[in-house]
Image (cartoon, rainbow, N blue to C red):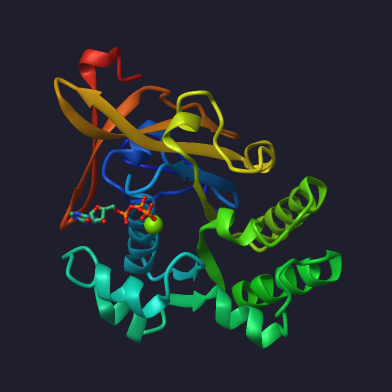
Length: 256
Ligand SMILES: Nc1ncnc2c1ncn2[C@@H]1O[C@H](COP(=O)(O)OP(=O)(O)OP(=O)(O)O)[C@@H](O)[C@H]1O
Ligand SMILES: [Mg+2]
């Protein structure tokens, strides 16, 4: 772990996300080894945030992994390669490793519609083996909601996420779990589909839409982040070719 003092005066035991504005919100970054839920309604920028998180790590020479359950990896890469912030060479060089969850299930022989405890342990082992073998320090699972649809009981989902998070943390891997929520839920303090993901996670970042003067704007808000103080204000999100841009929504109150 790196405890260096950064130029901005933060103590750096952090995974500096590199996303414009987010490290300031988090007073230096995500504490290393955290499992963070990135929850949002459809189209609000979850996948882009996750991919940029990996890109910024890869730029520093970190090994990164993305597990995709909502769209095939080929389609994911085809969509993102048009943006300047994404460099396909990072994939070619093995710095960003993209895995299809469906392919992983087939490798493991997990062909059943629902997973039991044994299947869940096999899945955790497969993910953590990949992380360990490649030396992954940044991981995105897009989405944990789709993955958890295969796990029928709340208790099993809880065990799965708790065990996975603990193992990834031990391996020094900082993880974003993408969570799909409906826009109604983002207004009633519910950041997951199953109601257990948020309690297990070290941090919650919410993405959503807010109407302002007749325009639907995207926003980001850090609801919790264990191990650091942080702003709880809403920030306006712009998805641009050079990446996610966060700016304070000053008229909604203080940015700190
Ligand atoms: N870098 C970018 N610059 C401009 N527009 C973008 C960028 N990235 C994504 N978009 C646009 O924003 C939309 C939403 O982005 P993204 O796919 O990241 O959201 P999401 O929350 O993952 O959506 P879904 O609910 O479909 O998974 C995309 O469909 C695309 O049109
Ligand atoms: Mg997405």
